[in-house]
Length: 195
Length: 128
Image (tube, rainbow over all chains, first blue to last red; front, side):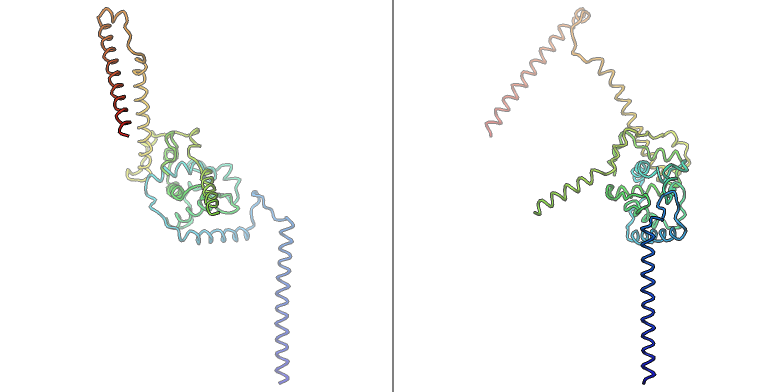
């Protein structure tokens, strides 16, 4: 009986010790984290790259969030040529500075932004199906991405206009410079009423 | 209170739209499509890119035709901006009398139509 009591006492002491250790570890971790944050030691300049761990962590958070948000998006028919005529000028005016266009390999924005904006004029190697790619593009254009330089166009542009841009981006890697010029030219008669 | 709230919401919604990217902002630096380059392309005729380019260039060509037609019609309009006057040559050919007759006829027609309008107005006001 006595032996059993001493065993129980010992087990309880061990549990309390473990809990105390976990609490101390947590407190120490939180203290060191807060000290690091408030020290201002982490470089936030866009000309200094994240370390691999931080980049991988942020990239995973970003991709998982986009995949979750875009999975329920219904993709309309994007084969209508009118969408290219509507999306082309908008892409040229709002996106090409960072995401480039056929015949342009880099710009001040594409060099200066970090993370580097993807070159949408080149074939993107995300390995996504057309449907998933369209859902993803729509979500990113509409909602933007925090702290990446990618703005949310949703508050100022309706869905139809964003889908037109998605349709244009789908065709962009296959466009020659001449095709791009024709499709993105906004003539004097073009008031954007087709949106 | 609900009325005020709905008005505030409406104003807010409208003001948000006012910030939308307006294509007309880019009219000043608008670049015209270089449609000549389209003929050299090897794209399939049913390709959406090709169809879109054709559509764009079609509307551009229509606009150019319209502008040309307007430019052609303008010289004719400018050539005869004033009513015909009797000149020495007209007098020799006896056209001055004809022109005077025409003017009389026009004046009679105008007077008749005015009388008719007045009678019509009077009739409608009586009915009311």
